[in-house]
Length: 79
Image (cartoon, rainbow, N blue to C red; front, side, top):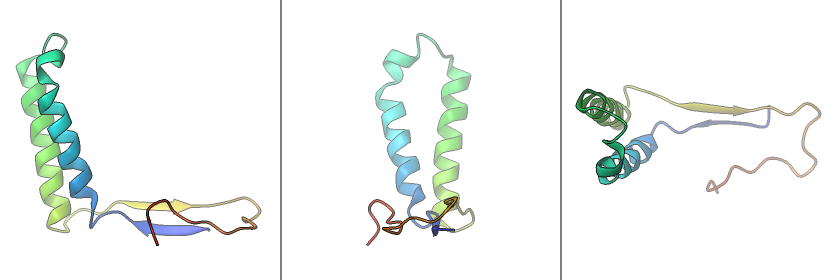
């Protein structure tokens, strides 16, 4: 195992960015999706963001390598 990282503490920011992208693109998207889809997607993104912010949800990434990495593993954006 090269890395075991929790994104949970920061993942609400990702979900909120997706929500803002979705709502700003809705005028284009509504040609292919109905109002029920918009409401369900909005609910999913906002309730998930709230759950991550409250630390009720967690998201883990585990990185494995077959033979190990000579230079080690460094996750992007993590110091």
